[in-house]
Length: 369
Image 1 (cartoon, rainbow, N blue to C red):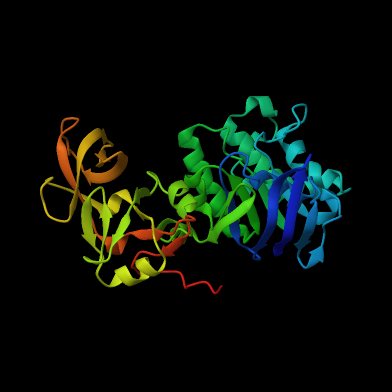
Image 2 (image 1 turned 120 degrees about the horizontal axis):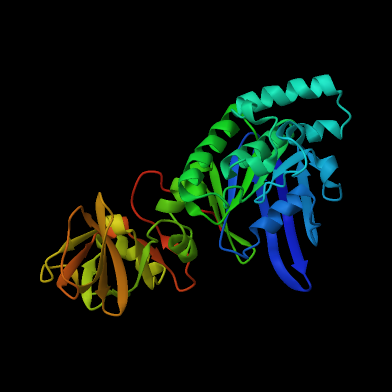
């Protein structure tokens, strides 16, 4: 397996900039997920690694080689597509063995390799079938088997689970992760589904409008988002964001007319001229509306989810999501209070950058300017 490096990658389509100064390193054996909304440039980045697109500027290195101008075949990578891309007229065995066939591997050796890979993915009993006779999950396993049999330097996967139903998607993402760890395979995986990214990746590269917003382990993105976009994209429900103003007399922030003392965090917030705070639903507490240092609001909607309940509370003109206990209920419009512990909040400057992070272990080191 091999390290993948993208250096200063830019891509324009008909004058429209899709990727801008993309610098990315995927270490040998690492599972990196490119995450972001539709049209953000993540699939274009993957296709540039694969050699299916040529960058407008920048270089692609795989295993220390500059492969920017090499064809896909010369890059020694295997790609798994959203559509599976199986040959409908071939048997499963022939589909899996096709990469070896075009390399001129003798038939007996090819058959042994097919049997070995099929056994590892538990599809040995399907070898004589045609793709039309397979379920979606089985087709995905065959597509993976065809990629594995090549023993490439890296695996590239473009939303491979998006055509599966929700239950099978959960099962298959675990299978892909187990397979990647067993093979110790360098893998770049594209998805718009944050659940896939958070559960599968060693590191997540979150992209918006062709620019990397944050490249970090999943838990770091969740706990310490680099900016307001990351805070709003990662997490279900997404992080609550509230407009605030600083109150120097009380060393507090004021939210919807209520003052929340910041204590020793006030100086950092004042120095950065923060304008918004972000906080997760699980870090908020519902209280009586008249308790001190709470935000007064009213119940907008209650969403029971079995083991827990999410409550949307209208605070001023802003809706805030709070996680409550199982069975919590109240009529719509009922007055409630929301308590914020500022230690669990992060604070954004006017540009949306996180300038004061939440307090806690695993806090990322400050970046040098």
